[in-house]
Image (cartoon, rainbow, N blue to C red; front, side):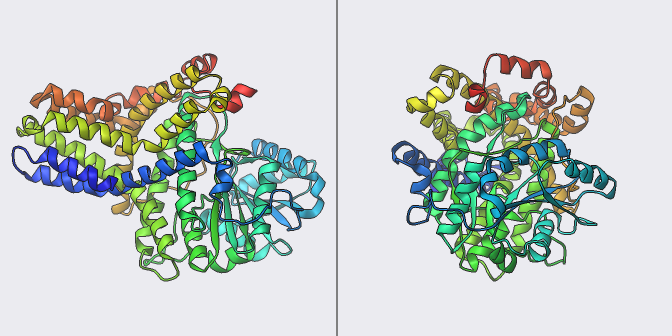
Length: 530
């Protein structure tokens, strides 16, 4: 209904003055993004209601019967960490905290480092593991065939004997013992469960970009995951880490298919979940923030490269939609992943066409009152999960206290929302450029990720973001030449393109980052409690 209503509103905005080729193209592009906007609202509203009114929200949406929270741990679980050319010190520090918390459970848990690192890194990894105070089983492949998915499946095929379950961790994963025990108990209570995925939040971040990003992402994902878990139930998503898998089921049913050109999938997790549900296994989410964290990219270049990699992987799912072995919900999960990425080129196209339409005399034909209604409705819909997450905190006294106070949280929300509007304009164009490269068969390199805090200089920012700035300046010039009102209208949603280069530098600046930290702006509960 949301998608239909917004499409009708857009039509009413475009009709006055008659139809032109650019107006028709704008409407087609808008109809293309409308389904994703509907998904945002469809997850956000029930998610907010459940969080506000359910006594135990995560338990209320978990498709598992009976009490499992105090049952004894009997399943043997492999704790697996996939690494590729990583700094082992933070990886092992997180692992040690987890193993210390699980020490009383003896041989029910064992740690594995699954390395795809280059040969030159192997001695460093081996030395770090040799110095580790607890036993770790280390395996390094000679190459990274199949990327992370190939690494995990190699473990399931050759190194998982004697284990029923596996905890999947990335190099930046940080889970508490209580969270891991909860997931294992869920798997024990539900023999038909193939994967249980824990909602994962960002760790406290020093730099401005991950600090602001995770503040908003946390609010949105809490609502999104709860609402999605309510209606998807046992056909839920898998994000590839901070989750427990059932090894036998995963090995048998989650093996990735090859693409028609015999190449390998770049993005694996949602396909693995869809193949499991297609085979009759359940996949569910524990939609609680407690005890499951990860790192976020430290600066905009790393953030945009991650987006480009995800886009290339998700668009490959188009080739799988008609493949056998998926349930209808599994196919919908793949469609959702595709919609998440295809919206960017369509938004970019709409912005470009708006400039063309304005320059050819179309700006005066847009009815401003209807345009205002459409703008407000679209903004509320596309950002519904985040806005509902903010509303939940402000409505609940306990949540306000966790964030310091309602006033402090509201200030962080305002700053984050402005940050998001600027960031989204930049990422839409970046994803569009990545989609063009994908169509031209130029895939992003699957290089190791930089996780260390760093600053970005003006030269690096300009080299990466000059196309965004040039594109934004050109379209805004067209809008302003026709109507300053049209240019001002577009400014909140596309103005980030005009400041892309300074945005990149400022959000990686140690001084700006320290200023935010010192004032507690966008502080998350874990930072406040430290």
